[in-house]
Length: 332
Image 1 (cartoon, rainbow, N blue to C red):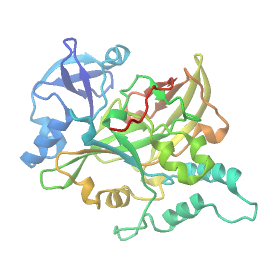
Image 2 (image 1 turned 45 degrees about the horizontal axis):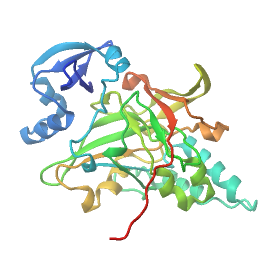
Image 3 (image 1 turned 120 degrees about the vertical axis):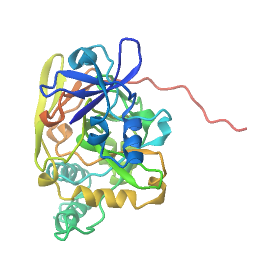
């Protein structure tokens, strides 16, 4: 099952179930947000699919039309955006590890053949990120990205700060969660995402990773409900002036990861601050491929396209460089 949040012609929020052919949405008659659906399912002791199955369905909408008119919303959000946490982890896919290692090695290696810090932590994941007994494995990398105010709806511009040194796509699967009344984390589902980062800033020194991640992001347009396939394939593209400048294969799912998703989730939600009742979480699972590792330098107006058929319609956003904001810190 896949869900979409959108605005109807009257500007009212709706939740729609995607048809089998992927073109039509069947709107739920008594549900305005996925967050409300998830909270109701928890209170009723239901799974999300069961909760949705009991809801009356209403009007039909064409998904392509909604996307073209900019009416599709992120598949999970909160009316108080600061209650949606954006966090994630990297070095979870072989492709991303190779890209990160190459980036840091070129910038900092002294040529003695020693492993970079990136490759060391990736190797730890390969050796201990998927315990055979299903228990807890090695701790992954982790980063903070922001709150719901940094989420860009599918199809909208991806803002690149004026001070940024670069703006590169990071195509990933993102897990979407709600915290129950008793502090239990509940996984609502998954979506494809562009975790969008400044890899040039990060390459200067790996301690700049925190700065490089404080950027906008986007996920959706569809929410995947159910068990995540072990092997997920798709295509990542950078499009310039109507032509494909670069494309690469997206390969994710646990078959292509060095950590199990359960292991990643454990090390995130073990912190009390991330189990605050009513909060939402978008937790990014890492990028398997990066255009910047193939020499691509993005420009204003480039389109990022992440096309993963298992998740429905592609996620597209256009890069837009911002002007320097006028601000100053003042003393009270």
